[in-house]
Amino acid sequence: MPTTSENPTDGTSLGEAVATYEAEGFTTQFGAQEGATVVCYTCHERSPATSVGLHALVRTEGASDPDDMVAIAAVVCPRCGAKGTLVLHFGALASPEEDDVLRALEDDRTADGTDARP
Image 1 (cartoon, rainbow, N blue to C red):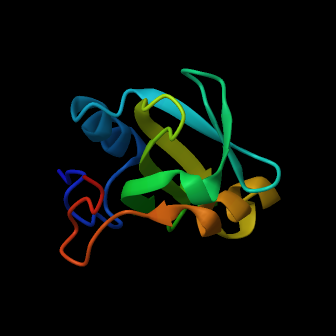
Image 2 (image 1 turned 60 degrees about the vertical axis):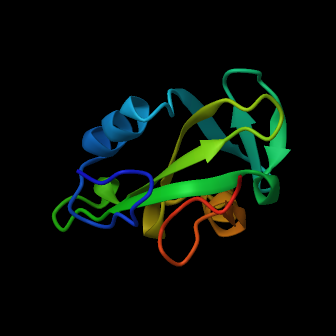
């Protein structure tokens, strides 16, 4: 099972990825909103996606079910510090909000897959 220090890719289910991130302390949820904005469901603050650090990412691609095409991101709220997951569709089923947020997330991973932030 991938950890947040790895660079996981396809082959992991949505439930497995969320469970792994939750076990590593990413227990709150986040949502995508208009204008490349991310809402933290702990403090209910909205932040530009460019200020939300991406610590890990898993993509699932359903060969038989396009609804499985999601990216599960492990992120931290820049306002309250809550760690959680942000689930975003990509591809044809992505909403404009999801697409904008996914493109704007600030990647905090280094080339070796570790967290670049202290």
